Length: 600
Image (tube, rainbow, N blue to C red; front, side):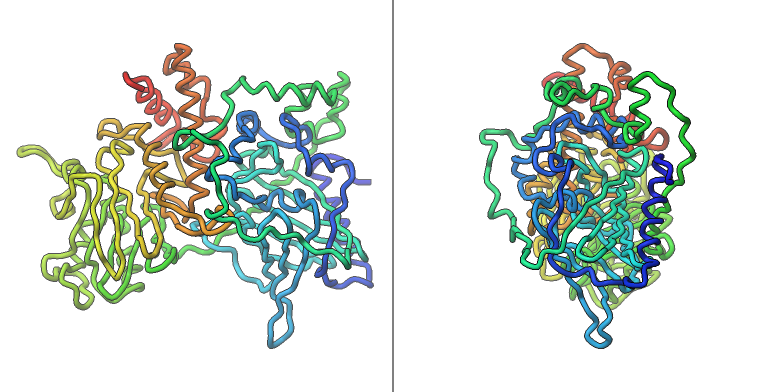
C-alpha cells in the first residue's frame, strides 16, 4: 500500500499512470473529444468557495496573509473585470464542458499539439513536438506555456510562464513563478487529470488535486468569446484612481464565518502543509503524530539557454528588448536607424552593441535615458560614439558626425554632472546632449511617434516613461520591475507616493487586447516582458503596502515597529531581498518616511 504522506502520494499517482500504461489496450490513446466534468464532494470549491476556507492547502504565511487581505470586490474594479481563470485553477473551475482537439502535421499526420478549450479558462495549447520552453524574460499568460510527452499511457504536461493568479477562488494566491505538472490519463470514456502545483513563493510544498471528466458525445464547451475594454464598465462608481479593495491585517471579519458554519477548528481552517495529511486529525485529537519522511524536491523546468550575458527578445512592432544582468534595454529599429531606451551597465556595452548590430545595420541615432542610475546610463558613452545623428551606414568603433543624441529629463543631466569644482558621477561623454524640462517630450523615429512622460518625484526626480505609439509598447524604467520592490532614492528626489502615481500613469497608457492580456506590452526596468495585468498586480501590491503602513503610522507605530510587523511579508518571496543594494527594509523605510511626512 502507498504511504499517505505527500511525497509518497506523488509516487503513487505516477505508479498508477505506469500501471495504466502497461495495459496493452492503451498505447498513446486519443484524448480528443468533448468532456463533461464530474463533481463530487468538491462541488462547493467550484460554485461557492467560502472566504477563510484554506483547509487542506499547503500554503505558507505569505499566502495566508495575502488570502486574508483579499476582498472579492477587487474583481469588479476596472482593471480586473476580464480576468479569466488562470491555468492553476482552470481545470478545477470548469463548471461545464471542455473540448480537447488535435493539431496535426499536414505532411506526416503526426500530432504536434493538443488544444483545450473550456468555459472559464483561456484556450490552451500543449505542444507535443519537443520545442523548448521560452526565455525567462518572455511574457506570461493566463494559460501559460505547455509542453507534453507520453509516459506510457499518460500524457505528462509541464506548464510554465503563468501569470500571477490563484489556486482557490477565495483569494488563495499562486505566484508568477508557479509551474504546473499534469498527467492526463484516459480509461475508456473517463479522463483523469492529476494536477501538481509548484510555487516557491506561496506553497511550502507541492499542492495536488485531481479532476475527473466523462466523454460526452453531445457536449459543447460554452466559450465566452471576447472580453476586452469595450465590455468593461465601472461597477464601483465614484472611486478614486487606483482604488484597490482589500482588508487590512486583522480586520477581515468574514474569516470567522467558515469555521463557525462548518464546525472546523479555526487553526485547521487556516491551512498549511500539515493540514493536507490524514495524520492531522491525530494532532487535533491531541494524539502523537508520526514523523514525516523526507520529501523529494521538484525538478525545476530549465529556461531557454541564454547567449552570453545578453538575450534579445521581440516585443511588438519595431521594438525589441535586450535583457540580462545589467538592466533591460529597449531597441527600436527601422529605416531611420536605431533608437535605444536606456543603455544598461557599462560592462555589458560591447555585448549589447553586438546584439544591436544583429538587429540593424544602421547607426544608433537616439538614446533615451529613463533615469540617471548607472544600470540605465552605463552604456551611453560607448553607444553614442558608435552612433550618428545624421544617419547613414553602420559605424563601429569611432565617431560619425557628432555621435548619437542622448535624451533625458533635465534633472538627469543635473544628477550625472556636477557644479564647477566638483566631481561628476559620470564622464561627460555619457551625459545627455538634449534634455526636456517639463512634463513631456515628443520624438519621431522610424515612422513612429514616441512620447516621453515625466512622473514627478517617483524613483528619482528625473524619471521618464517612454511610449512607442505605433508599436504600442511602454518602457517604464525603474517605476516597474518584475524582480524587486521599486527603488526609491529619496536623496535624488524620489518618493513612494510618486512611484504609485507613476504606476497608475502607466496603467492609463496601457490597453489590454482581450481577457486582460496582451495589447499594450510593457518593458520593465528589470525582469520579463509584461502587459497591463502585470502592472496592475504590482500597483495593487504597492497600494496595499501603502495602506498598511499608513494604518500603522496612524496607530503611532515607530519605524522599527513597522519593520517588525512585516507589512510586506506576503510579497517578500516575490520582490524582497535581505541583502544587496536595495533591501526590503530599505523599501519599508522609504515608504514610512514618505507617508509620515506632513501633508500625507
